[in-house]
Image (tube, rainbow, N blue to C red; front, side, top):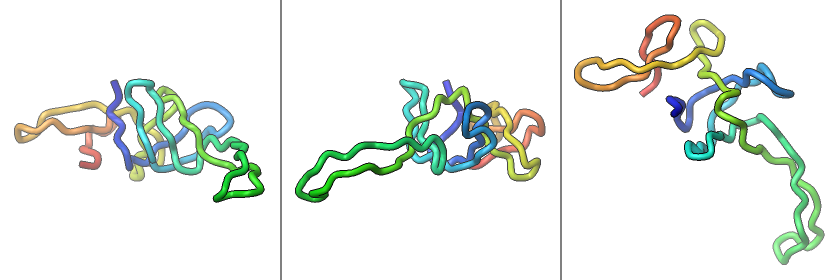
Length: 104
């Protein structure tokens, strides 16, 4: 289970892109992966087609495992874990170290 949502700003905790931040573009909770803007670029070989007669290679973002991502807390300028709490009868996401409510 993840508390991350599409549009959240996250930081990469491990791997070649460690320390990079970006917005979540797509989220696959079942597979446990997320595509993050500007992270985990790989080359994709494109077959020639009518739209692209020459074919070629393009770079694009590939999914990253959710365990390698942490929510980016702008106030403390670091990645934090998220928890949940009930406030005014609504379930909200909170940053673990500070207990402050985070986005929507």
